Image (cartoon, rainbow, N blue to C red; front, side, top):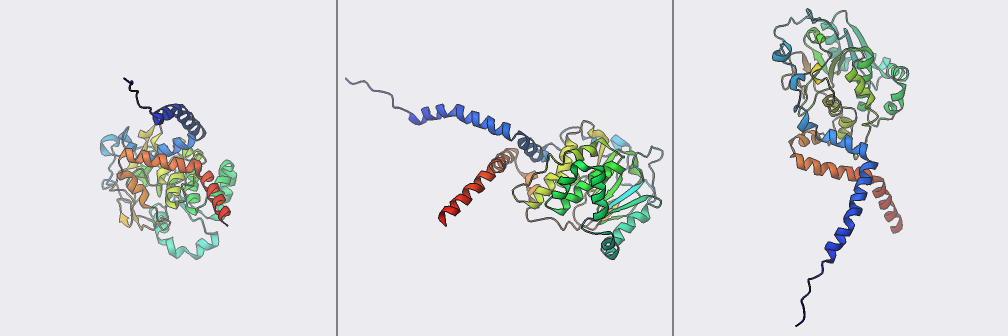
Length: 336
C-alpha cells in the first residue's frame, strides 16, 4: 500500500525564506528615513495627544486665577498688575509681499484693524514687517535660517517663520492683519506665552504673546529646517505641517514646561472664520487656504488605526517618490 505524503506548501516555504529579507529591508528603510518617520508620526498623532497630558496649559480660573471671559478686567488694561509683566509692550504686524510704499498706499485694506490695536495700546512700540525690513532682519539675526526662509514655496510659510523669529528676538505680541482689537491685552502679559486654541486641534499662530527670547519660541525657530517637507504637492498640508499651526502645536506638545505655555480655551477664543472673541473681532480672511484645507479637520475625526495606515502610505510615497517619478519618465520615453 502506497504511503500518502503531505502536500507541499511551496508558497509558505518561500514566504518563510523571504521574511528575514523583508525585515532587513524594513529596517534599512526605517534607518534611512527615520527622521521622516519621526516627523510624520508626531504630526499625525497630534489630534489624539494634544490634551492627553498636563492639561494645565489651558488657561483657566481654577489653575491660573485668570478670568478667561475678561469681564473682570477693564477694557483699557495694559498691564498684568499686581503680577509682573513678562511680555514687553510691543505690537508686531507682518505685511510680506509689500514694500514700505505698498503698505502706505494700501492701508485702506487692513488699516482699520491694525490701527484698532495701536489705539487700544497707546504708548506701546509697534513694528510693521514689510519685505525690506523682514529680509534684512532674518539675514542679520537668523542667518542660519535665511536660505530656508527664502526658499519656501508658499509666501505664508515665510510669514509664519518670520512670526517666530520676530517674537523670539523682541518678544511682545504678534497679530494677524485681520484681527481687530476690542480691548487691551495687558492682563495676559504675566504669562511667558499665550495663544488661542484652534479647531480641531492645537493653537492658532494668528495671535501670539511671548516673553523676549522665550525658549519655546526658540524651539519653533530651530525646528523649521527639520520640518521643511513638501507634503505630496498639497499646499495647505505643507504649510500647516512645516510652519503653521499644526507644526507649532507639535513643538508645544513636546515641551517639558507646557504648563507655562498658556492656551486660551476654545471655542470662546478660537479664531475660526468671522467671529468675535472676548478680545478680538476676527475678520476671517484666510485667503491662502487651498483645496486640501479639509485634511486637518478630517484627520481629527479618523480612528487612530486608519491614521496609522494612512501615515504608512504617505511615508512609502515620500521615500520612493523620486524612483516612481523616474520610472514613469522612463516608461513614457520608451513609448515615444
